[in-house]
Amino acid sequence: MTLLEESPATLSAAARRAMIDSQLRVSGVNDPAVLAAMNAVPREEFVPAAQRDTAYIDRSLPLGDGHALAAPLVHGRILAEAAIQPGETVLVVSPAGYLAVLAAHMGASVTSLDPAAAAGARRGDEVSLILIDGAIEQLPAGLAGRLAEGGRIVTGLVERGVTRLAFGRKVAGEVALLPLAEIGIPVLAEFAAAKRWSF
Image 1: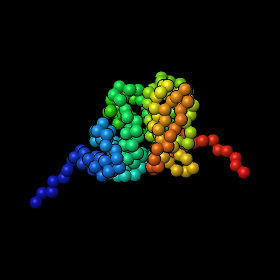
Image 2 (image 1 turned 180 degrees about the vertical axis):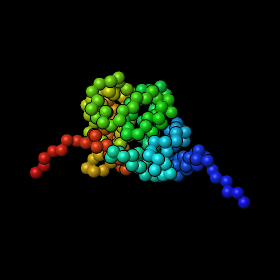
Image 3 (image 1 turned 90 degrees about the horizontal axis):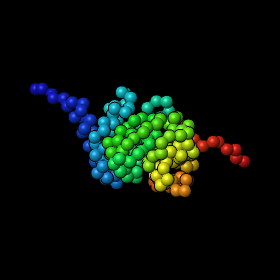
Image 4 (image 1 turned 30 degrees about the vertical axis):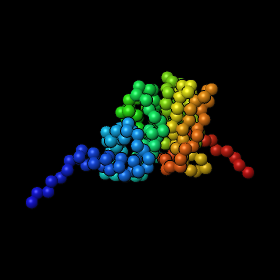
């Protein structure tokens, strides 16, 4: 009797389908373009080798250096809220390349920055959409300056220790973020607010 083993590619494809059916669809992420991108991009290629077997579970995965790859649902929700249009210019701030590759798969023209570079950003071409792959306490003025007038931003937001998905738009030169839903998003320490004294 011979035991046939499935190839890693077959197992990965099955894991992606299970992620879509048991994590994304049941949580309201049903946009065909988002699901197609998440079904096409191998998530396990964006985590350390020791994490590959758990790349599709419903939780964040440590990447090292204090960063983590967010759970699949977080990326699904970010992309669903972003409503990427083919050909639009998108800046992705991420400690891993996964979200940038997903956005590119959806037809965006993507520029990617790691969180440290983005936190200190001073200038660069304007974009119509910024995606931040993590939760921030504050949006640096330099990064907000990259967003074109009327442009959109989707990010995680930390408020009193709770992380939420947030959407914003640049109007009259200002970006205001509207919290949408509480969801566990890895916090980006590079975007921490300055500590204040309190009495």
